[in-house]
Length: 85
Image 1: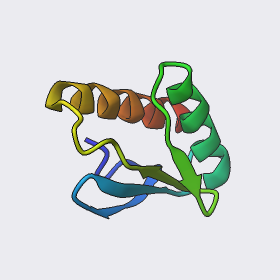
Image 2: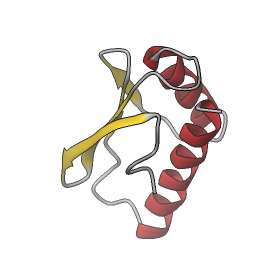
Image 3: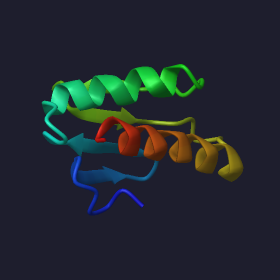
């Protein structure tokens, strides 16, 4: 869903450890986009770190249920889309 999104520069990772690198979008610097996504997700209970200022670093528990993973990723995707408007 986020592949090809104007705010997303690259998605990379292995297994359940991955990063979403953001880029400047909608007049906002990449770090500002990352901050908006991070705080929006935190407000909905999804916690992660940012690396380098513009990379969302996601590393859910290996025992996470598929439904919980899908719900968390949906929240992240929604906030990436909203931050880039």
